[in-house]
Image (tube, rainbow over all chains, first blue to last red):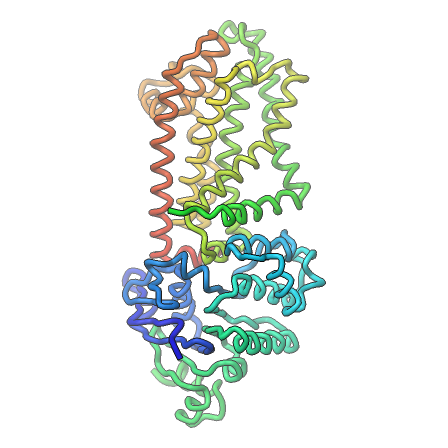
Length: 242
Length: 265
């Protein structure tokens, strides 16, 4: 299967501080790759470079065969991002937000696209509500709709189910699984929820201090490190090993 | 370089929805220009009856106050559009959307004009019944003066937004104070000769002095000096081009420093 994302010898430093050091990985088409690591390990910096928000100090990123530094706008047209740390304008209604982002992504048949996403994400009743007045579960689904408005081929998810109750969390995970299958989407998932990562990801990268310290399929990593679950592997790699 | 008007319209809609959804926001846009112009209207009336310099032209101070307010509203309007994205934690969403810097600038330039006009048109309408003054006394040249002020207001907006991009929200206070810093050199209410010689040199480097000298020349002496208008246009072109270059440079620096990721913090 071909690679949607290729990361080669990627590094980012701020002055003398090295945030990401010489990392390499690929995300295949129709694959969910997990990105795990403790806070400050370089996950956000890596995602920032993949989104074109940060200029790498060294190395190269290709998405859909195009290098990001030369084709930033073309690539942004086909990728998207969701994070609980960024929000949509709170004073606008859900529909207005989706209209604005649909225009920014130059989506054709925008009305149909909004209707399709509203149905899929159970947002039809919320379209005329003010975004800032929604519950966190509802806001999360609106952010997901915004992230899918351009029918992206690659999706970057930063803790997509953080602060959600179990029912909404499960809805989002099930939705992502189904949507990925239907659209052959490539996803990079950064999460601290090990059950979520075990359920969704076909392979995992473990980061610490800006480097990838291990990688593999979830069950393979559990077996390799002789632990019961991914959480114990995470603790072993990030807490006890130096 | 192909410009996508759908994306420009999308960014305009974001701010249009924000303004039209909120009555306090519309009121806020109208309130300050109206207060400002009413105040200067009474000051203008007082000077017109007690000053030899102004006694032939009742509306000079008020006209200059309106022109300055237009500049102020355009500049602050542009900055506000940028600050709104930071305050609403929407900055990252904007910069991961496939919109070019040029498209962002075009959209904000147009939106800032709409914001400024929403505030200024009611205030201008007040001047005629309250003070018996019409801006149309400036004739066709009014358009050139407004255009020059609009371009310079946008230029200041782009310069401040470059600072916000590069340094983040800590640059916010500068955003509010830029116009106050330039006002003394703009010679809005007095002739440039009032300034000390060194300050005059600074003033002549800004388009403002030519614009306000021209407004006074038309209203007091009924003389149109095209040299002033041309100088303002040349300087405006130079500063606008410089500010756009600086904006691109700041964006590149922000990508290196990581400001685009941390800007809400």
